[in-house]
Length: 531
Image (cartoon, rainbow, N blue to C red):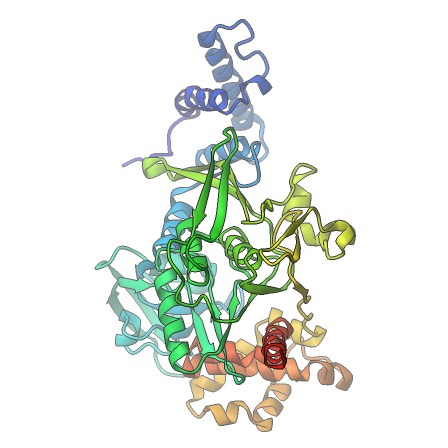
């Protein structure tokens, strides 16, 4: 049976030329193509489009030093056409579209493993099995190594390829070869099952009575997950909240409205959506008083926060419900309408823009160049940071009259740049030294939380690191990096021993943005008591 993309070039071009030309006309781009419809003759214009596309593809096929596959040529053609509109109009291949839908739905089918590759040539390492999943029930544990998936060695795969092979339709089988310590590898065949994909992976109490909740993305389950976690934290004594939206790229608009509504009062606007070619504006408002509308809170943002994250942060900032701490967010305020293309993926085309309740456009400017848009942290300081009022952008005002700034993204009320990882510790992170060492220690079976936090464990790592190719370091370099190294070792070991949340908590002493958020909440509480 032939693959749907494996057709000859002339057949493919005949199929593509007319739809591409029609789409170009619909988007107002056909005028950019030479000799298309100059005489007003639509049929002639279509034939010109076919000829132009066929000529270019024929030259690629006959002359290119390394001609791409037909599948790549097709997807790249669509990408180029859509990216001429704006940075966020996209073609999604079937594989990427499937992953995107899994993120939105909050579930997928597989074995239930958190895995990584310590290096490009190492086999797949199990960080943690998810409880009550096929992997957990089969006895797979942290520190195990998956040597093969369905007979394919994982040391020859990227981590993404390996994960895709482990995933699949519920009820189907996958055979893995599992290595553990010095024992003989075991081959086992497991049935895939639905695995929950949590969008709120961490929610716990901090020592001062602050609750902390991390939202990774916005999907169909996010509002329910967050609400359940906040109920639990409230029962544990939560008096204030840090909502961490750092490195959250966004997701569902419905989820963003639902999350913001948990903290707002009925009728308060969350976001407005203004069409690109229409004067119509849609105003999305909280439909009832949020159950946590009175909880003091801070929102954490950074450059990795985008889209739905910015909608939530902007709404809470504009209504004086939360102070925003961290760094200016990405500035992704273009609304895409997603159209599935059957078995061929999907196309997302920008149809509107997002505005915060105070009228700030969330979208960052991309008119100068896409390079400046995609790499804002590499631009000159006056363009990249936008921290000083002179370059913040247009002013707006919150409900209580505070000045907030537009100019793309959400500007924080309290600017805190993330601390840089010390050079030696960064070198160890890049070669996965912390992970590799912790995995070996966990594999020995004599590790617990007390030992992980001991001076002896740190000394063992220092000796291990000194014996590696990257291990040449001075006493001064070690001293500079030691606090981070200690936390990173605890992160990797406790993730394997007690789960991702324990590992995540281990890095809090190194998280200056989170520590500042705690301080802001304490200062606010102290100010209210004094008043």
